[in-house]
Each structure stands twice: as C-alpha cells, then as structure tokens.
Length: 275
Image 1 (tube, rainbow, N blue to C red):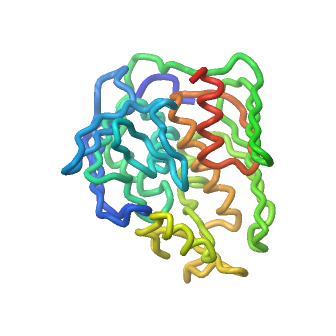
Image 2 (spheres, rainbow, N blue to C red):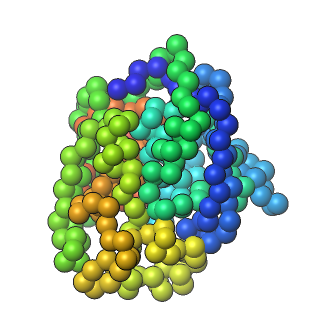
C-alpha cells in the first residue's frame, strides 16, 4: 500500500457527457499542497461551490454517488474517486464545469489514463490511515457489508441477479495500482433495457448510450463489442465500492460484500465513522 500522501504533478482536463444529466461537462484536476484533501469545485452559471470530500458531504446515492450542499451538487463521482483511491491521490482539486462527472466510456480507465498523464507527486508526509478498531457489519435486507481491520484493502464481493448472463458472480480483489488498471478499471457501468424508460422518467440516464454503458436485454448484452470481462458486472461493483469508500479517506481493511450498492456503501461509512 502507498503510505505517503500524494497529489498530481500537472493540471489535466477532460470533457464528456454526463450520464444522468445528458449535458456536456468539462473536468479539470489540479495539484494542491499536502494535507489539502480532495476538493470538488462546482462551476456553473448558477453555482460556485466548494465541497470537501467526506462521508457527510455525500447527499444522494440514487443510481450514482452525489456530493453537495447548499442546493448545489455534483453527481456520478464514484468512477473518478475509484481511480484516485487506487493511485493514492489524496490531495487534488477537481473542478467541474457542469453538474456531473463525465461518464466517458462508463469505466474508470479514462480517469486512470488522466492521472498517469498528469504524473504523480509523492509528499514526505504520511497518509492519515483510517482503520476501525473492531469488526463491523451492516445489513439492509439481503445487502451486507462486513469489515475486518487489516493493513491493506481486500474486497470480496458477490452479486446476485435474476438475469441468466449474470446470475451469481464473485470476485476477490486486493487494491493495487497495476491490478486496478488491469482488472477493475476497465469494467463498465451496466443496466437493463427494461429499466431504461423508468430511469428516464425519473430524470436519469439522459446521456446514456451503448458508448458509455453495457446494456442487457432479457437474454444478452446488446452492445456490439460485448463485455471486456466475462465477470465484468461484479468487477464494476468493486470499482464503485472502491470509489464510494474513498469518501472517508485512506481506509484499510478487509471487506466482504454482498449485493451492496451506493446507498449501503455510504451508509456503512456514516454508521461507523459516527456521522
């Protein structure tokens, strides 16, 4: 694991469409001094806001993870946070011209490439490591997160879907820069064709397409290029989990997770950090 604080060496930017808003978005990452933390800057005609990344700052987890306050927000932050977590970037300013992080190809791989293009700067200051002093468990129906203190991050994730292509998938992953790029970051967000109209009626996935999402009908993936991994679905759930738990910072531990999503991921952090 990376033990010292990090930022990026150079400012970088990328543009794309928001998955849920359907709006064009520009994203900029900039280096900052040690002990600054992860900050989001919202820049729109209506809002100029700064949000420090903490569990308390997460205000919505419907179909995505949203940070905000004072009637302003930035949604779909989890893929970017997943890449920042994997590469140990705990000091960075994130400026968003728009109200959502761009979905790009639906994975975290474009953000990995962005971080690598920026370069990584290591500080001499050690990270503030967060480790709960005991085993913890949280349950919401059939969704479960179990935690054991450890000096690294290991995620044992299992998902269950009625869809025949998914059914039950399990994957055990130990957080590491290179394996993240190879095994987790390429896994794309996914959804079901039967749910598309319902989500759009809720004002969601206005920017969704086969270019940025894996879509399944009743039997198969309808994207012409298919899947990047046979078990891409559980890998993407791990990607989301890595991003969601970064709201608390540099947490260490072994996680056994079943069926969890953004809501329970965030509830776990708030429950056991006393928020």
